[in-house]
Image (cartoon, rainbow, N blue to C red; front, side, top):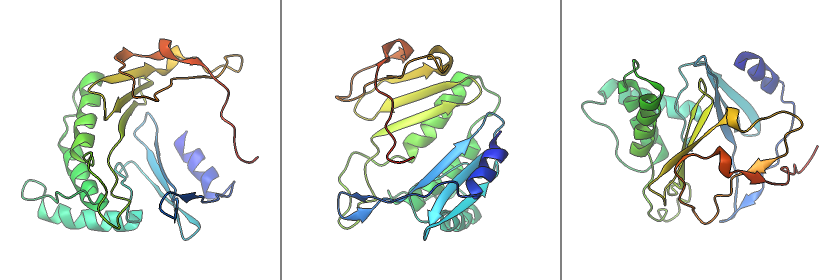
Length: 212
C-alpha cells in the first residue's frame, strides 16, 4: 500500500500554509509513515518543495537539520562505530545518531511485547529531558510524550512523560466504519491510564479541517 501513497504525495495534491508558532517562528512540516511490511517513507518540505525519502532503510527521523543532512551526519558516526563513541547532547542530530545505532542492536527474534519494549527503550535514550530549551534554540524542547505503533497487530502505545505508565489501544476495538461516531481519548490534565484503553474513548465532534 505504501508505494501508491508515496506516488500520490509526489504529485503534491495539496498546499500547506505554515502558521506562526510561539516565539515568532513558522512551523515546519515533516512526516514519517510506515506499513506492516517494514516499508517506510519520510516527507519533508524544504524551501517550499516536497522531498521524499522512500525505503525500508529510512527508519529514524528527528526534528533537524533537513533529512539529507541528518543522513550525512549519521554516516560520520557510523564510521566511528557506536560501541566506541556516540554523541550525547540533546541536539536533534546527536539524538538521531544514538537512535540509529541502538535500533540496529535490538533483537529481531522476539514477540510483539518485547519488540515494542525495545523500540521504547531506544526512544527513551534519544529523548530530551524535562529541562528548559537552550537560549536561542527553541527546537531543543523537552520530550512530552512517546508513542509506538505496532502496524502488524494494529496496536498504538502511548506514554505521557509526566506519567510512569504506558497504555495502549487496540485499533480493532475502536471500529472505523462509516456509521461509527467520532470518539476521542482526552489526555488533558495528564490522566494516569493503564493497559488497553479503547473503552475510555468518549463521543466527540469530528476534527474540523481549515480548508477543503
